[in-house]
Figure 1 (spheres, rainbow, N blue to C red):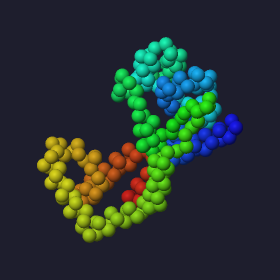
Figure 2: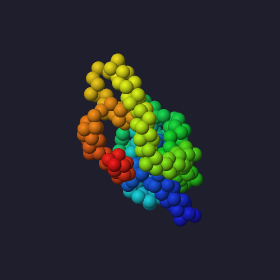
Figure 3: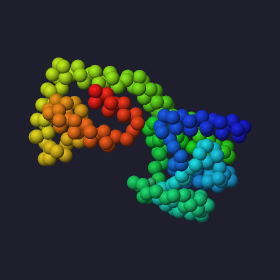
Figure 4: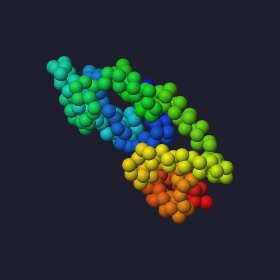
Length: 225
Ligand SMILES: [Zn+2]
């Protein structure tokens, strides 16, 4: 049974590693309920969790979790001691932890949930949100970069880009105090239309230096051609 459970967890972690770039040490945020359940069920979080998740972990909690456990007094004293040993992170709510946290987590893709059910730690299967996100991602990846590029070329041909650029420029002058500060944030569309090509090249070069992701390199290459 233990082996099956572990295999299951390994598969789920594989999903997050592959689709959401999870890397060791896996950061695990522990709440008061989890600490209390671990204590009651004699689960040694620090010892058992890395084995279960299949990698080194970075255990942390929040200030509000500790405050809440403190406020609950004697009954939660042991759980408080456990929580205190983790890395304590500050959060936006200093009084009470977010009771809706697990619901909120489920609404965001890419965050696994870990419970203690029937004396054991159980990693929840990816939420529908996570699955939907990955599916969408995979669909988008099927639209290759050269297609996006050809859309830009088509627009240039039709003079659409220039028009858009002019429109943007007007708006910028009206609102922004420092046009230079806006340049970085602007979309590519605008740059194509209104700048001399030397400027454009410079900016591209700068952009290239900033980009680290390997995946982006092919995009840059396309742009250069
Ligand atoms: Zn908090």
